[in-house]
Length: 258
Image (cartoon, rainbow, N blue to C red; front, side, top):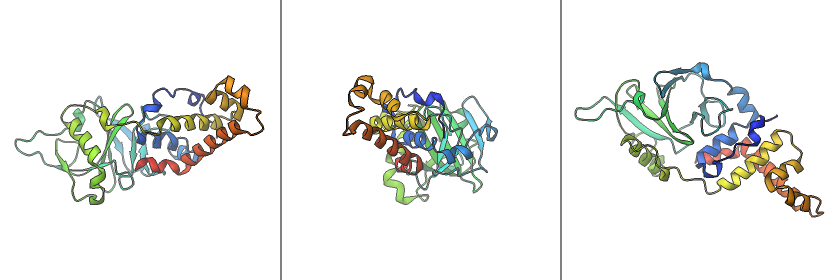
């Protein structure tokens, strides 16, 4: 498999990515996933300036992904839906008819990019996105194409309650008009290393020799000094980074969903 040339560069900001963004970055480099998730624009219907509705009959691309716009979109621009049963970050809500004296919630008027995926089983999946910051909701009840009242769904996934506090706080801030606050999307503590591994992986996907990958990762001075060292420490570091990246592409990325 060969990687597009732009994957060798363009990593600015990756070291501040939240954990979920790395799940997508590694999954979208999986060759089998790319074969089934290519151009999905034909399934997307633009309803408003920032609101789209997606045909949910084509679900489960693999890697615990229900739907994604395109594997060519990085985490800053992709719309991705993860399986709610696997990803505890997905917030479960219940949509009720608009109550008297209650402020109705209208997704079509969201100030952020919002996508609605209606599944065959009637569940409504929503992704609200502001660059790399995304909030995914799994909602049952009234149609979200109309104004609704939204409440926390206590019957949906009781085992996940304790792990949804941050998603709930994020949603409450968003509903209050505060947007997506930085504190709700902390950078993954291993983001620097994950970005490093991603660069090594992309060099390998692009078919670069390991020495050239090392030049990108460590710089010319280090490579010219240590590449031929008989202990092969530098070579081992490059090989290990590539192997780690390949493992994350296959199944390792699933750990980032938790």
